[in-house]
Image 1 (cartoon, rainbow, N blue to C red):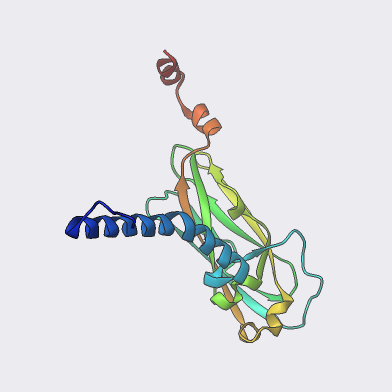
Image 2 (cartoon, one colour):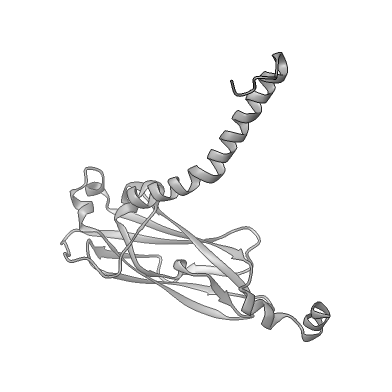
Length: 198
């Protein structure tokens, strides 16, 4: 017996409490890494693949890739794709740029999350290099062009769902993140640093 000394309602409350703790642990600790792994392997939910080099084969079939940009509420940057769309052959390496601008008087760090639609194309949309792989820091008034290099895996043309995909939407959302420690230290006035040390 799990709770041998408890009787009646107390035993039932203890059992329910342990179930809640177990479910909370599973939801917070076990499921998110598994779900992330599952999405990366299957492309479920529009999660993209990553490769070090381009595809070995380029098909005659073309796909239109549309680019979208948005900001999390409170993120002070402006952020947009330089090109709204491009036609690309399946297997061909494409290069697209997004523009970000920090209009504030302080450095702002950001990290981009991404999605691909339709979801069935997610696992075939393969990134070689992307600004979304690392945190970006823009200085006050700074504007940058951020590249994403990608290809659509030729295996999509053989997939029962993927073969009908003629248009793909690549969408990014930038979220403000804490400044890296080195940058934060540079932006802290000397008087504040001295006060913190003493």
